[in-house]
Length: 65
Image (cartoon, rainbow, N blue to C red; front, top):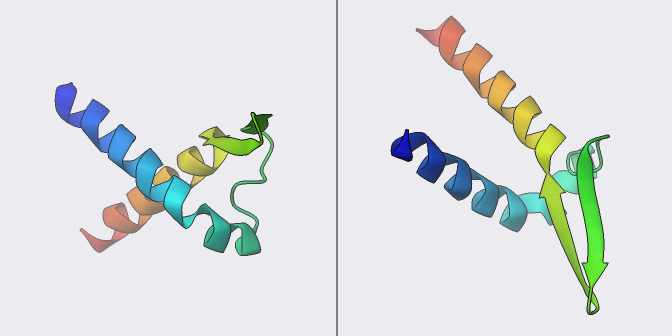
């Protein structure tokens, strides 16, 4: 269980850093991705994009194996 929790947090950190590049493809702006501004900084919680990327990675791993 702890391993999955660590994986999810690492994935969100990597996703947040790649978000400016991924927004060109529409990720980070899906319904369910929350963006809010606090003290002049924009924070993004990409729930829908994370689920979509996870499903795509799962399907690719399923077909490769």
